[in-house]
Image (cartoon, rainbow, N blue to C red; front, side, top):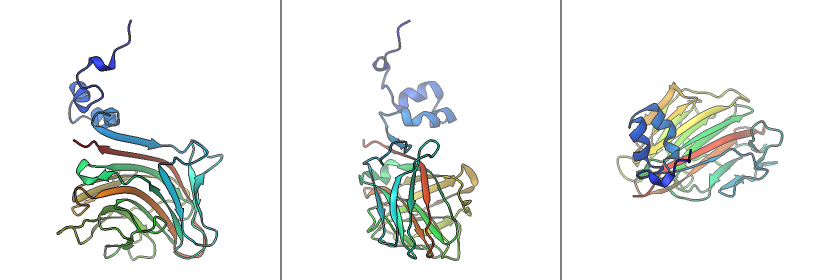
Length: 261
């Protein structure tokens, strides 16, 4: 029997083709959406190569012994690992080079990562306009949400043990009112040292949502977020909050967005 022909079907690899067979709101449709390439940009990074994809820049601070993310040998399934160094508040980040995501098109990402120590540390996963430095967090105050580091628009999932609230908080900010004042939602999750956790971050114009480990207990949204037409990029940052180095490890990153009309 001859193989089916992709181009024989109406709007191949599109949402329209997918939903004709599985329905608009089904779990199967949601699972297969990355394959609707006519409608979605989608890319994943499993870090199984011995060099990091040139799509990303690994940036470390000037802290003592700090080392940028690099391929981790002998890691099951592949991963990258970094070293914050031993300078208090020093750290490192992984930033997507192309500033190509617009909240109008509902970008999002899935990150699977761990940190060897979860005390005296700050972790941030974000979609934002370009930060001044990827090696430091942009939410400078988690308790009274304050965004700095050159960022005016974004959705940030931040945990900072120097703050009163020491679990992850979702923070959103945008350029225009009412979103020019950052708002936050406490998700209440603290990672386990040396154990992977999964984050899904979803962005819309003026709002954002996050869920950790697929658990609705650790999920929440903010109704403040990036303005439409503000170009953003993904950033992942870990800094130490004392003079002991932290060693973050990233196993997987997936990125998606609707395509421009």
